[in-house]
Image (cartoon, rainbow, N blue to C red; front, side, top):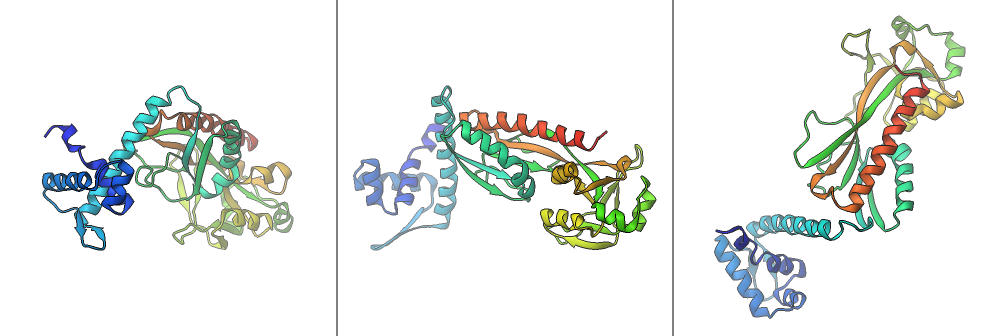
Length: 314
């Protein structure tokens, strides 16, 4: 069967499902009820399955109909996006834009950059979500995502750009140093400090990352004085003098600059997880997506470099 034959009846079928009846679909498509019914019948005959269970009072999708409807929605959506790309090649960024961000990093660092973008392009209507789990951009309809950490290999449908790598340092409050005394730039000193650990969503504490020269990074699991499952509250606990934490510099940059926290063991600052910008390749040429990618790639990449300079990174 020629590929064009496979498209026949799909728009009528999807409209009938969305409208809830053949009569309503006929009105939307400016067709007769008979024409809609015959189109659906031909489609069912070609597929060899019933798509609807019809009674005098209602019309429901069969299991096969539900599966086919989801597929048809995706096909029509991609066709619509392709048309938008061609029509909008020289237009300004406008329209809805689904954006997904890591929870804490997104609130602290990405949102200010997004506000700049939205002021420059008021026609863009963002829908912003926050999650620290790995999301399927295609399945969840996300146009652009920022991610801390990432897969070893990305699907072919997903574009990605590496923006840098976070820097993790040991730090504590000046009040803690006043209580316990100075802490030398020596790994053995970690055996004598109170550890304030971040508690991950899976319920386990995040280990300390230790690198000795060019050796592989080790995972150290200290006994915790305190475990906190919120990044902001974790930093607060360190600031209140409960002990020492190993924290990404982007999370404590302000506290380091004001002196609310001080860096310890500077020789053992270590690279953490990478920062990535992700997008659906099929939507990359849409002006709204292309403009946002360019803005985030420039602004977020610069911020990572600046943060490493603040703490005197390698």
